[in-house]
Length: 235
Length: 296
Image (cartoon, rainbow over all chains, first blue to last red; front, side, top):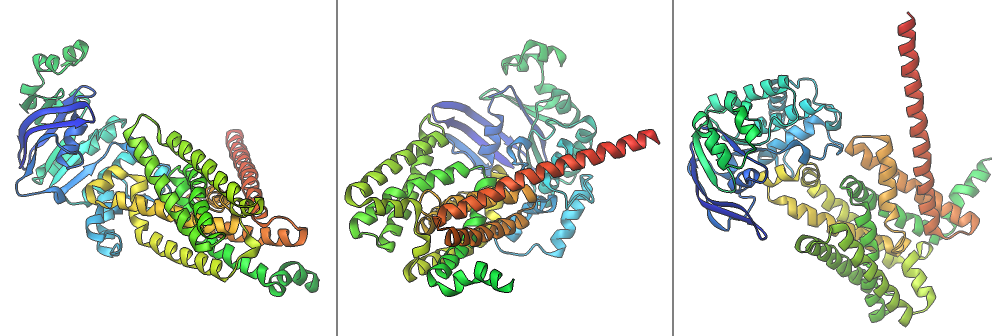
């Protein structure tokens, strides 16, 4: 379980999150939803101890920071850097290999299995810059999978990918959820939230609502979260 | 024929120890500076390297003030000044509204002005030329020992942080979640840049030393899209340019450090032309085969 207690985060003088108080249980699959600047990515960073809390904090029961696998937004990755898919995905084994230890045949086997799982078999020798947007996202998923962590944190995992890729990658997440892993994902697309995520947390600098998706994504809550009326009407 | 080749390529190094010393100094410098240059260009920090090359000047100048053209005093001064400017520009960029590149530019211009002022007020114009453009053909034992030591330390340190540095370059957000080494890798890398620039300034001068980092990397980037081969090509380019530059300098009585950098410049321009030709050829080939298929 992840217990978030009265969490407040500032960026210099700007208040990003205020007094967020909630719990995310082991095995939960939850979407973090909110308008731009609502503090979604900040919440993820606070959970991963990447930002300092001005007040409150995050506490882990059972699985801690070393059991987190993070999938960043794809545009934050330097795609022009000359490394292969294999090298990129094998970075997910950093906790086992570190600076010096060898990437063993066993890890190589695992890496190939993860690539297969996301539909990227036979791509391990390609340069990451050669991949299409969808393939690139699949590769990020493979790196997340090879970490074999209990808590998966995904920042906009379906951004700029087609329907087919979205369906495949959502199936990967659902598989992880079925295996008892905790899945926390920032999602922009409301229909996707409704389709794949049983739980939702709605943010607007503070926590507006958290609970079963149908109960959270109501017109009233969405208006409170500062969504445009057109978006609210689509729900 | 063999005699001519011997006279052209071997004799300058076998007959004159200043030439063989210069070659040794430049080759060890190529071994450490070229890989660092590859990372600098891949991290889009070429201008940072250039700025830091200028930033070491006031440190070297203070070393010069304290003990004349003492290699160790100037080296220590250069390292301290380079590190201070690298840290300050990062600090100013984080804590003010200035962008990192403009704060770096401000610092290096100030450093250059201070350095030139100190050296020109206390030394002769020969001293100033020595610091700005190096003395490739006058490397003594001390200088060679220093260059070799820095090259060894730099190569070993780069090998040590290689994996962390690659991850820090490609995906720093992810790397932060699996390791706290990202910041350390970044600062070790900056230190290696400073060390190599300081080593380079003894041989090539502060204004030219960054050329041996950036240009080989820029050439290598044209020919491969794999990191390992890129580092190897950069090293080979740098070594080849040192060899050719020194020979040109010997046979045509040219200044050695600009000659080396000009050979690198030649390789760079040749690469641009060849790559353009290759692209045109492959485009033509593709369109011909497509039209052949359509006719069939």
